[in-house]
Figure 1: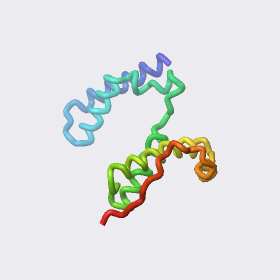
Figure 2: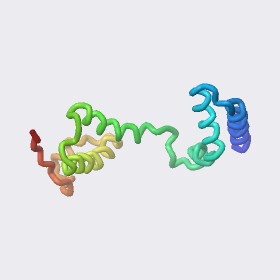
Figure 3: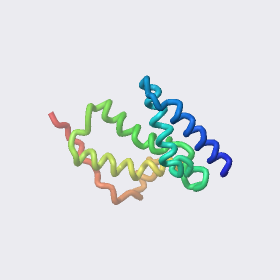
Length: 124
């Protein structure tokens, strides 16, 4: 592990020195990435030492995707209460789909009694 950390750190130092001029927007982005890796090395390599940390960010992106899709379809959330209800329902159903449990069976069986039923009213 120490060898890999040293290699990543030396690559970031070389990249930071090579893009010091930041002549183009691409060089500026590369320089910023190299600087962040050097400043937050422990955060970037946490997945290698703490096995509870996932290798990628796919789960978080999946959770956001449904909200963004709903915004695209309807234009926006109609009310703040409706957005809260949607988020509450999603927070109960998302772990079920992650564990491959059929959500219709859980909802129909009444196991999710703490969810407030959303009031669907169209605002005109």
